[in-house]
Image (cartoon, rainbow, N blue to C red; front, side, top):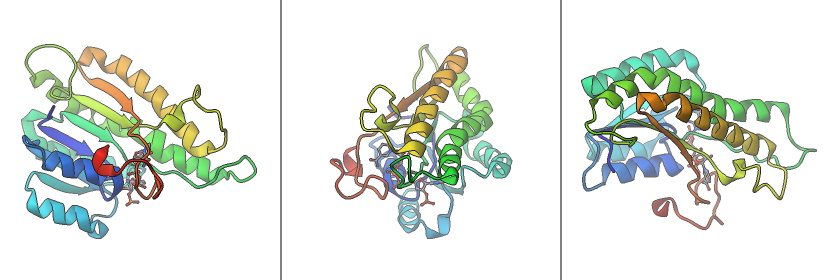
Length: 220
Ligand SMILES: NC(=O)c1ccc[n+]([C@@H]2O[C@H](COP(=O)([O-])OP(=O)(O)OC[C@H]3O[C@@H](n4cnc5c(N)ncnc54)[C@H](OP(=O)(O)O)[C@@H]3O)[C@@H](O)[C@H]2O)c1
């Protein structure tokens, strides 16, 4: 691949941390990796990683804190400069434990929608001008992360077709909404040469995926 400038949300642990690690250790790493997390002081592994990889810039971001987006966009502009942002990875996510209809709570639905669905669309909107700068820089034609892209980390649990077990209301609904958002974004941004896609990483051993998951984050 590799994009020259990348921003990853939810980089403190799990798949976000692993994506930052693998990008930094790539044979041709990006020039700039903006690793955002809501509590950089507590993100010890990410801190250590950033000490040995100068391209990693650690920025504080709680994705549901819309009030902080203006400052974030300013920082990102300063860091990426005239090159713009090639790749935004909307990775931050939550998955409440509730399963069945008798257990689901109002606030779980609202909180999960805010993190998993609302934040990716609003952050994409906020960073769009910087993605558009990168989209106009690349030579040639076609959509690619080398030009400009938004990748939303979704889940097979958001699939309506594959839902044969029910339950998991907040997470399933929020990822289904994320898939709908991805489809609209991909249509809206096509003429701006910005690739938009969502992926399911697979079932991975993270705090969210649990110890029984079939894959380790390194193998995603
Ligand atoms: N693991 C799996 O099997 C699996 C499967 C399919 C899809 N996914 C998706 O992959 C993504 C990463 O999951 P994971 O397994 O790495 O989960 P994880 O280990 O629980 O990590 C979640 C990450 O999201 C961050 N986060 C949560 N709320 C946030 C907020 N309001 N603002 C900023 N960051 C926030 C967390 O930060 P803190 O450290 O501050 O809490 C943490 O860095 C999620 O979107 C998830 O839905 C995972």
